[in-house]
Image (cartoon, rainbow, N blue to C red; front, top):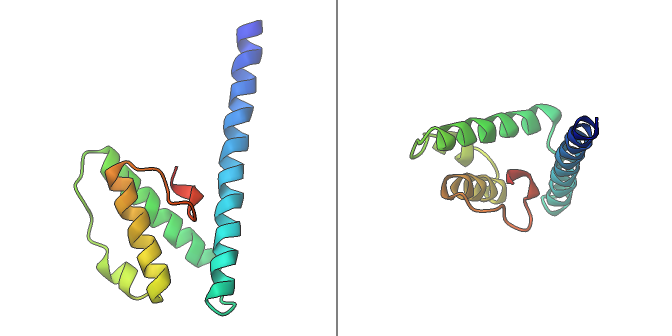
Length: 105
C-alpha cells in the first residue's frame, strides 16, 4: 500500500510542478506586457504560442533539426519575436529556459 501512496504523491507533485510552470509563464507574460506598453497577450495568442512550442518540442524529440516558422516569429513585435526564437533555439539545443522564460523546462 505504501507504493500506491508514494505514486499518488508523486503524481500530485507533478501536477503542482506543471501548474507552477503555467503560473510562472503567465506572470512572465504580464511583466513583458508592461514593458510593451500594456499590451497583454490574449488567451488565443497564448494558446497559439504554446501550441507552436509544443510542436517544436515534438519535432526536437523526434530527432528533427528544425522547423519553418519565420513568418510566425517576424509578424510579432521585435522583443516578442526574439524571445520566441530564443525559446525555440533552447528547445532544439536541449538547454534549460532562460531566466525570464520558465515554461520551456
